[in-house]
Amino acid sequence: QLQASGGGLVQAGGSLRLSCAASGFTFDDYAIGWFRQAPGKEREGVSCFSSNDGRTYYVDSVRGRFTVSSDNAKNTVYLQMNSLKPEDTAVYYCARIPLRQWVLCLLGYKYDYWGQGTQVTVSS
Image (tube, rainbow, N blue to C red; front, side, top):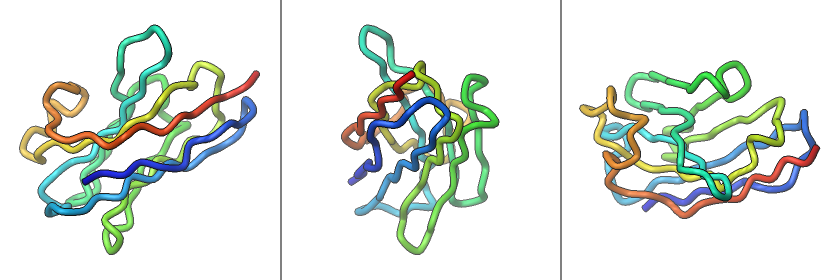
């Protein structure tokens, strides 16, 4: 199970931290991806994270502003979002992909389990 939380309404330039709590599977066997979907737009991958070895990946639009980390004792992955922009407004999802498929981590259809989304709204 994956449980995403932490969304909300924030002004441009502000920060939010999303959490993705995992349960029911071996955390280290999977990478966690963060995706987002804005109204009328396709879902896009935002970042990938491996708690096994700390590997991270960010798409260009968030690199330098977003940071992913984990608390392995809690099986939780965090997405710290700073310097938020109105274009970051979307429903954010976390999902898992087998770690062996790391190179495919931005391909949403490769993920086998998704958490529910959490809404992030950035006002201008």
